[in-house]
Amino acid sequence: MYRILLVDDEILVRDAIKENIDWEGMGCELAGICENGQQAAEFVKQHPVDIVLTDILMPYMDGMELSHFLHDNYPDIVIVIFSGFGEFEYAKKAIQYNVSEYLLKPVTAVELTEVINKMKEKVDQRRKEKMKMERLTKASENYRKNAQMIRSKAIEAVVNCTIDTKTGIEQLAAMGIELTESSCRVAIFDIDIYSDIYQVDTVKRQESALMAFVLYNISDEIVRREQAGIAYQEGGNHVCILFQEKWGRNLNDRIKEICREIQQKMQEVMGISVSVGIGKWVRSPEKLIISHAQAEKAIQYRYLLGESLLLDMEERIPEQNISLTPHLEKLADAVKTGRREDVETALKETEDAVRDAMVEKSRACMYLQQIVRTMDRVCEDVALDMKKILSGRDELLHQVTEQKSFDKACGIVREYVLKIFKMLTDMNSSSGQRQARLAMDYIQKNYMDPDLSLNDICSYLNISTSYFSTIFKEMTGETFTEVLIRTRMEKAKELLENTTMKNYEIAEKVGFSDPHYFGISFKKMTGTTPTEYAREKRR
Image (cartoon, rainbow, N blue to C red; front, top):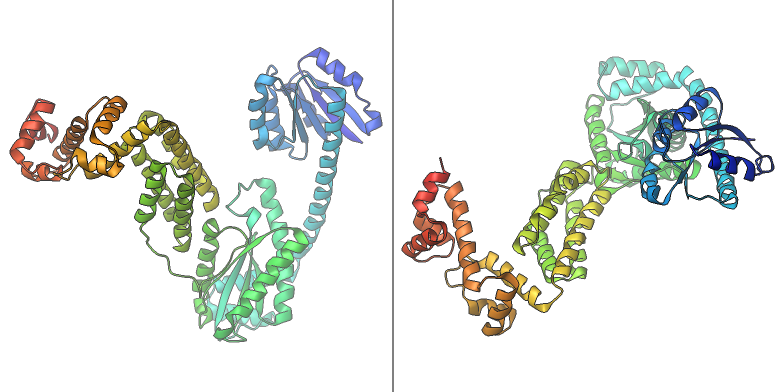
């Protein structure tokens, strides 16, 4: 029997649902009817409920607030939300509260019956999972009472140097565990779904300890069979293997095969992926803490390389500092010239370059932020509305940093790049607009050339000077000379404000071969001489 709670502030809706559904024939019981979320929350505290059917807009506590309350306090309850047409997108935000279904009002008896049958299957699945967890909990509790826990703690103490090494080895020997003076290395196994890649709540944390127990049993069985070393649990979530030299350094592949077999077995038995980091060989037990730290660092590369990671630090390429400048220039050119295929190729090459460099998360995020800033410069070059572009930039960069995997962060950046690409494509709806934009871009890149002329741009665009002058004036409202002088003056003002360069040096930097003519042009445009402008701005 499935117990259902109906929550809606409209009496006609409540009565219609109550009377038109064959509850008993569906194996269900309408356990209660409430007028708002506040009543429903109190009802759930007092009575067992399997499924909640709730409206969105209600007084005192609405359906979203009720869903939040149930998600946090009664995660086993299945939630179905009704919503009017105008509330539908708002209702979908409740996905963060594990809402299982959304129904658009008005709801027919046939639709509701179908949904309830689907929700019954979900309730059955959750009951099975709960029973499985209860069995695992019982097994785990038995495990914690036996010598295996003591054994794991003793090994962990030696590896992490929280006990004198000699004393720790003697304690292990008393337990029948021989830790030799030969070379050793540590492998750390971490279950992906319970790692910091995901948002781990209280229930997940409880599950993680139980699944780690399963992982330990699998690891212990395989390592004992291979006589390769010692498996032990570390904390509540990690399983470690202390490999002792058996085959020698030249047979590291065998260790990786053992780790891969453990990963595959865990996937078969529990349907869960596991990542593995393997530290380097050390020549004495006192140095095991170094191998352990390396294994922990290897696990962190899961952000960059993805789940089911198997990384051997003996083979890892050292972290590299890379320059993305060639990739970013290629990307900027592809966006400006309207070639989507080239944009996607440049993005992929940039992402691959970061992956190949094997950098840590903070540096990977920095490289992705460089892509975003490159797009900002593209927008500035082609005179897009920067106020509109920059309005969501801080949130975008925050989202990139907050992602738990490099792939997800790349997805956000890729979406942003393609958004800019579309804006430019729309802007380039006519050939005249495109040619004017390319000319503006050419001026931005070459304004420092004192010989830059109208003929240079026309040759670059492969059009006549008369045609170019006409479309450029039409599209920008300025002539080529006006844009060139304005660009040079803006760059000169930046240098006057932010550097201590001499006037003649600035003149040369912005494309004036004659400093005197630079001074005349500057005063004509700004009303002050370069010296007066610098004195005022550098105060």
